[in-house]
Image (cartoon, rainbow, N blue to C red):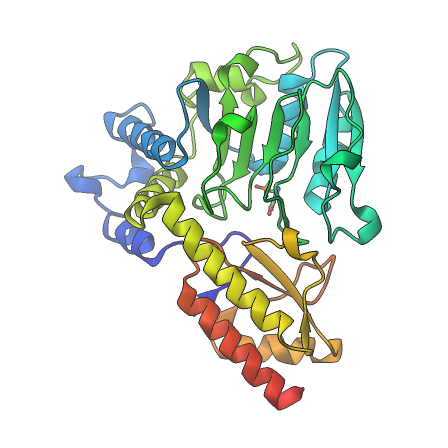
Length: 356
Ligand code: PLP
């Protein structure tokens, strides 16, 4: 079967097989990873290796702390203002879809939020051009969502701004190379390109640590996590182990340049198949179409249910669009191979022939 789920998403088969083989007795330790103390040499080693491999993959410099946390990206929607906004601060946010909106709503609980630009008027099928953004003079940070998982809208440019950029990269991280130095804070839930749900990654420039308001809970304070090597409390050790395996797998694929080229090819094929047909459509403006999440509709939506049922029978799983937009969505993260995209396109063409 091929899994097109938006998250938790497909994991590389090789990683699942290695985890299965190491499940009961990790490298002769006589224990499963899940049974080991997070203070043990084994787990500390696993965490250190995971961090080192991630730093190598993404080119993360020493001026950034890498934190492995819990609570998902949604918890970071609150952690970001708690760590950066100060007592009476203002932050700029760009609203490009459902995940931006959630970050904005959470930010408003903690301070003054200026929505500098929004694409709600196009039903989130575009990204507002940078020259239309109304940034505050004194913003503590500028928050945006480089890839909107639900709408399938992705930035292929980095906005210029004086405030540090804070980005929710949950559904684009590790899909292609980025320049980490462009950002103040990068955060992501793990359950797309990193590993299993439950782990949360935060990459924060060290000069932004130590600014949290006094009420910030210890568990949300990035400095506490950084000072304790992400082991202030018991970390999600098994998820971290799996993420480490995913990072090694990515390295073996040739790193982010190589996976980025594959991802571009996968997305281009799928969008071409959609655009070359009057039966399927994708509403997103062409320059902002996501490489990871491809929503599409059928010309006759009364066929949606049949499409999904037949796709499932053909081993093409989890193609149902998000409940807020309907239609279909193919999430084609790193672990979804080009063969999966080819199989999907062949199925779509066959379905169109029979129903178009
Ligand atoms: N942000 C984006 C872009 C997402 O795609 C998701 C989940 O799919 C979230 C935030 C929420 O992440 P979590 O479930 O880890 O809180």
